[in-house]
Length: 373
Ligand SMILES: C[S@@+](CC[C@H](N)C(=O)[O-])C[C@H]1O[C@@H](n2cnc3c(N)ncnc32)[C@H](O)[C@@H]1O
Image 1: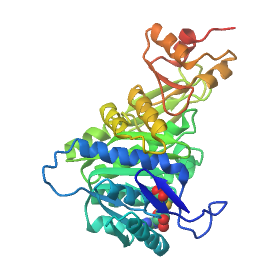
Image 2: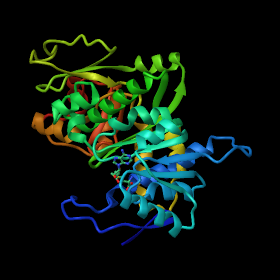
Image 3: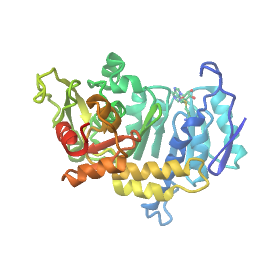
Image 4: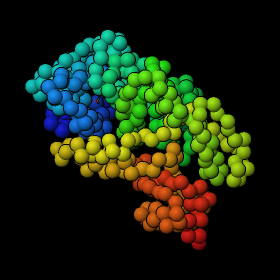
């Protein structure tokens, strides 16, 4: 079948029902991910003074149908599509040609390719965890590494052991599980890059449906890498009353008992405690979204919400809190306004329609924003 995304049309196979089988993979649900990738590439170029400089190089490291590479080529990037599956390589070649684009398509293990060549932008979009590609991606990229992870259960602690194995961190299955997953992922990537004296700072990130996506801007030098390692730390979390406390540092010094309710504490980390996006960059990404994109409205809204998110490493869900406390929920705008009127900072988050971030403690949220029945 033919699929049109943005300025390109690609052929993709019908996908088997249960997602298993030999067909070259294509997930229509990831259109938002791909639209935002194009917007990120445009935002990156908008801040670059090329002045006759060479064309920027983009690697679609796990190409499948090649849709990402084809879209990057249509944006003027010197695109390379790479895949180990010969059927994918053939399809990606056809898709480049179908759009009159001369992007390169290679049948290669992406890890080998990223050790041999360099690209301005490397895009990693594998099945499951991206960690097997992380070392090579930081070797092969000079400006930006884009990473998708679809193994959300290990990342958020629902599959604890595989989360620990893949990400060398302790994830916890908290109420803010998608954000926990994002911060475990970024932590592992920041530490991987730091091993090569590279700072990989997340400039745009979103957790959408069943995947996490992050864009990491690279800066070389031990000092820059050290500065990012300093933004790693731990979160102590109480399942019983939802108290949480973030502590910077690689060495955990966990609380044994919750200071609010005396129940046991769970500690997650090292996780990324810093910002998951640069608000100014997110705004440029929003401006780069165009009406020809199938997910334009959703993409713009996501950029706006992400840019306005408070710089706090965890979030709450108003509906869950109200259910837990046996009180009625109110409209989100009113809820946020109540917190602000009480002197706290508060914002919505992109993790869900009823989620919010605040600098208020959980007991303070209840006192400030909840009307007891
Ligand atoms: C999730 S699909 C990619 C989807 C595609 N990027 C898109 O947006 O539609 C993952 C692809 O990675 C490929 N792959 C797996 N291991 C690889 C490796 N070591 N090097 C390059 N590609 C690999 C698979 O063959 C598969 O086509």
